Amino acid sequence: MAGPLPTNGLRAQVEGGGVALGVLDNTYSPTLVEFYGDLGVDFVWLDFEHGGPDPWDAATVENLLRAADGTGTELLVRLPDSSPTLVRKALDLGVKNLFLPRVESAAEVREAVKSARFRYDGAAGDRGLAAPRARRWGLGENYVEASDRETLVGTTIETAAAVEDIDAILDVPELGFVFIGPFDLSVSLGHPGEIDHPEVEEAVETVRSAAVSAGVTVGGLGFGMDDVNEKAENGYQILHVGSTTGALQNAVRGWLEGFEGARN
Image (cartoon, rainbow, N blue to C red):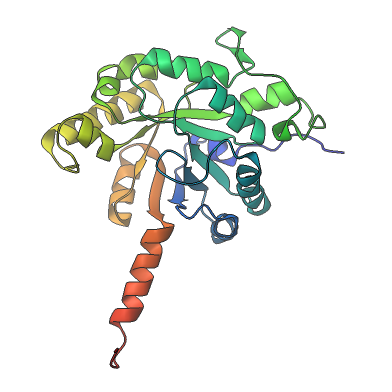
């Protein structure tokens, strides 16, 4: 019989004051999720907003989760929207860490976070109580308590409206983290792709400093390990260090450039 439900390594790491490093797997491969776990990454980021399989495809998501479970890494899943129904579905499949895209307000964040909780802010939550995979099909012990304790729900801050409402967003009970998205922020602020534009940098710093002051975990993109180390020193605790396609690009180009013979 199934025993206690598994703990959330990512949540434990950041709540203990550590920095979690992860890789974006944009191939959505259980084999690579398993391999990254063996390599020692703290989490594998699966982005269902900009690509990948349909997050409603339970069998596909379950296989990705099994690959993570088998090697002790965690999945960090970005949903394509903040629908409470989709939040509940992902959690029922066994996702423990998820974050919302393109939020505009604290009210939207609160609705989604509440949908991930059986008990919320001293009252009833909006989570559905059933016997899905997350509950080990009814065999898991202390499911309600364990799920509320281990689930980590965060949100991307990537629109001008979200930056303007950042203090209220950070005040949402049980918000697990904010993940700063500079690329979409650059679009929202009228400078597409210019993540070093002063207005974009100012918005990023506004969110970072407000989150650190509020005691809310900050996540973000790392642009090389020097940048990752600098961000970790500045309060970031969830950091993306690269992607599958980026790693392959660097490796394959290096091989080709190192070839000394003739290619016809």
